[in-house]
Length: 340
Ligand SMILES: [Zn+2]
Image 1 (cartoon, protein in one colour):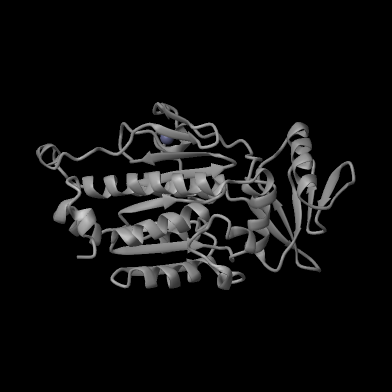
Image 2: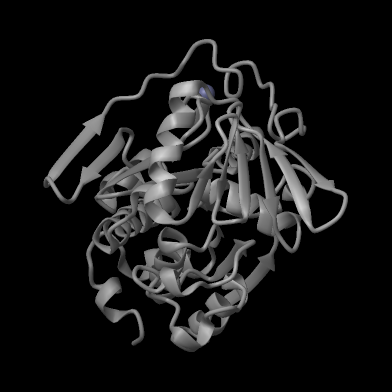
């Protein structure tokens, strides 16, 4: 009875529902996109969910992360998400990891029997790591991102002909983040809906042959990059071609998975200071960053470097010194305020 409204949807049916109940989906990142997508997956009856996030819930998250409430502030997102999702649907299995997904632990956390990975992270380094893992192990994943009033969704279904994320996303430093330019809760909810909708199609289409596709009138997963701007009511489908020289899906050189591209983080002596040098930035990008940060909190400009909120010192080349209680918090602050 629980899934009756979904089962009478003709493209789902009882068989489709059974398929969902046998599926395992990993959600990487439990911010607005990840927590909303995880909730939709739990309600839809995905048999097993794997939740991964390194952060704790902050008050400023509640504007858009509807799975969490005021009692969760200060708690780990992955643990809080499991608690809430378990109350929403006690018939499914939920595992969680309070950890930074990196090249050293991804093989242990994301086992090969995962059917689908949702990328709901806030940084390119983890996205490219997931992309490497997905292409190498031929596990589909769905990229999602949103900032301001805009968002993107893209299905990566690894095979000889399909493009991957590195076919079109460049490694250039991404300076716009939710912390520096904001984000509307309407775009994150929309992007989660689109992402989970694609997830259902991918899970339902698994191992279907052509005649079954016709019989079930199945809609194939989207091949284009989807773009939405809710403020302007703009929607675009952008065709993505496979890059014949793609370092990941063509040359199978998994730079993020083997740790070559892992951002360098060093614990400095003394007062819990971490040094992070991720991507290089140029002078214009440094000035842009300075302008954005000074609108948010106290900023001291030393010329060669800036100090933001007495917590982060950022140098012109992108190197940052961060006061944090541990490495994960430092990394998280770097991706929030400097971007990567
Ligand atoms: Zn590629």
